[in-house]
Image (cartoon, rainbow, N blue to C red; front, side, top):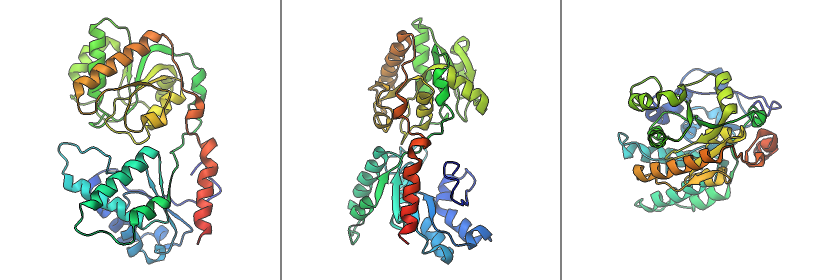
Length: 342
């Protein structure tokens, strides 16, 4: 929105909690509560893929005919399922995302990986249905879809000129199961035991204050430069200093944290999977395995060793980073196209 101030934006969000329930109930909350914003008429609705668009339009008749652009920053067909999660939940989320897409006038994905895995998963799900849906909906959805990455601001581009510590490894992801921080910590413990020199800035949200990684933190104690979430100023400082940015995620549909490290000028070490080959094609890749932790850690460790032995950061070309300065026109054109069609 800041990149497109010529439009009059109204932003509606909900609390970031109770995800499974909110996927099913967000449209009820927006549709049933008194809200002057939602009583108005709009030129365009931009909605995320699980936002309950069909129910919202049904409960708010004034929005029913408003052109709608649905944006997929992830999809539940390619999203791994946590052990404690029910597959029934994920199937419900898959149906919700399909319903939103069918109610839209245009669908955009942040990467080709996201788009292709969505349509592949969608076709597989529909083949399991007892009856075929009429009128070839998958083909029609694909025809009114495109790929538009989530752009970054220029905020971290100036950090490319900052002096880098080639031994400082930066983790800047969520401390959650799908980002697999334990694999990084295992690889670093082995490198420490082998006498390899490095320092670690373990940033990112959530998990730093609990006991899940207390053992690893104790083993790596003198190698840890920072442990836990950082405010924007500190985050920017660590991003500018780090010579190496890493990910060992099980899934990533674009990898904004990796792109920020790349934008700041770090060597990026990532697995050869999910969206990374598309989004950071000049990265230092390791083969690894999302399913075999031992194999993943072993390959990750050797890639880290290679990056550390290089003795200096090898930044990606800034042309590979999607920036608002380059993508603003594409977004504005799509808005004008959708508004102009109605």
